[in-house]
Length: 322
Image (cartoon, rainbow, N blue to C red; front, side, top):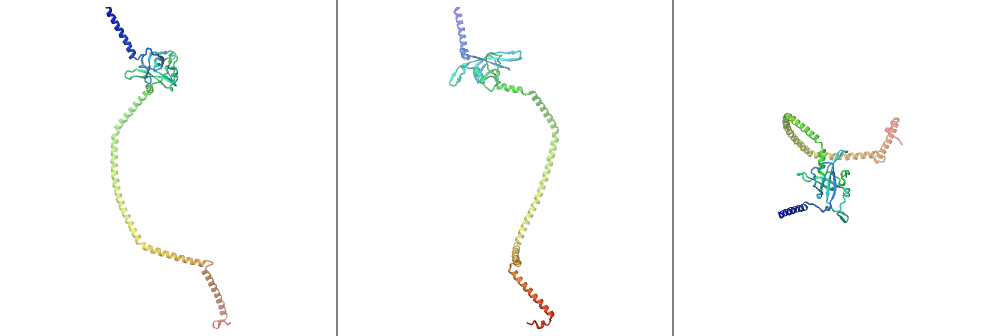
């Protein structure tokens, strides 16, 4: 009986040892690894977050959630949710120039922009994880009265930002606007149902009138085209007749131009002679003046002879005696 109890006890003890070994090996527990504790304080909901939830840095697990509490401040009437993180520094190596250190300085990392955000691990189960990353642009809002541990400031995740933007949307106003728009569309549809048949009939009448006008315009254009063709033919005939007349009158015009040229030459010569007569030093003018002087002298002699004849008519018979 004692041997049987001993065997049962050994079997149970072996099972416990094997179970603990399996937990240590397959449960990713680090019993002898150094750990660091930090805190993340959330002001909003941490739905889906539970103790044991992983803490990751860009997808790499660096710890787990070890505690979640609710802290109510009666003075400010605010509720904070401090979440304690159990980090594994052995998974992180800090490189300082050529030296690689295993110690993680959380306050220094926080000062350099280390932030924590709540992300959904699975949309099916609704479980959440805490992801760590560097974002120096995010303001570091700390809550020194909520925890005594090193606090990692929080920032909104992409899903939380989207949810915040959706919550900020005026959904009621949008719904009312949509209902008003639908009602306007319905009224417009009813009005169109009443006005479309007369409008269609009017359009049909207008279309028929336009067809008749098109036919009339086509006929008018055909008549104008026929008259235009006749006019063009007449213009062509007139041009041909003008060409023929010009060809027939070409010889006459040539003779007329020749005669005109000769007349212009003769007129130019006559003008040249007239000019020579009117010129002060021209030969013709000198000769003319000499002839005029001779005529004047002759006239004077005739006047003297006439006077003598009047006094003595016998001079006509006897003449002047020397």
